[in-house]
Image (tube, rainbow, N blue to C red; front, side):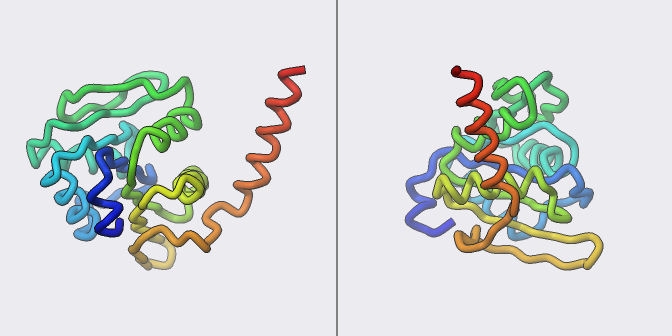
Length: 173
């Protein structure tokens, strides 16, 4: 997140792969969360296993209260007994509505997860400042930095959007 964009942001989305199994958040991610806490931002976080639970555990350990836990079908995890919001009826709807509800995001992307890749494309198209912590357990590599607006994160994103639009048109007839 650039400084100008960060100063305007009020709602930070923490999102990440369920395959992320580290016990602690990466330092680069903690720094961004700590800045959001200092600014009193509302932090939106999911409740699935993996990165989301580690985010929640970190926020609880910091004693931060301005947190919203987003879920779909049912709430599975809420470490800090924070406010929860049902963002949709399924994973796809939840992810989309959580992205719509934020001003900026921090994303942990593990092993090229297709769900996270799709979310990165949505964040990119919406122009929301996003920090991406990309890691691969197979190659034991990490890349961290701002979302690259020239990069294609999900090569099938536009095809999926096309078919979704066609399906919606067909339903209206």
